[in-house]
Length: 95
Image (cartoon, rainbow, N blue to C red; front, side):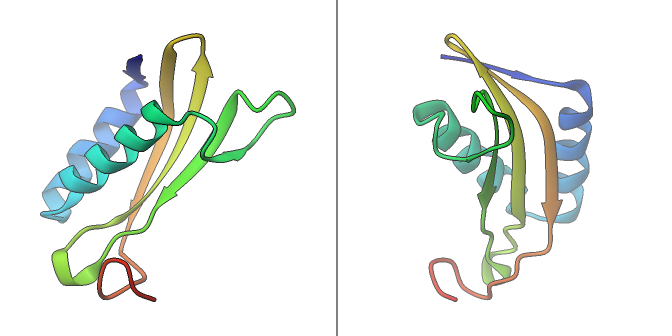
């Protein structure tokens, strides 16, 4: 599997790393998931090739929530958009 990022995605990641110490953790976890299971996210088009996946962060660990918009084509996953935001949850794994 190959991972490609659109240029705006890299900028969003760089900005997030400056704001949250856990941004790299969120990025690594979310990209690991979509690379291993490309059908995990919600389909955004009829064929399901474009999807959205949300990784819920945790305020206690300064990990942001991350929403990825990604497209799968063959063995390539392209991250089209990434939106980092303050975590809704205080502790990872709990509501």
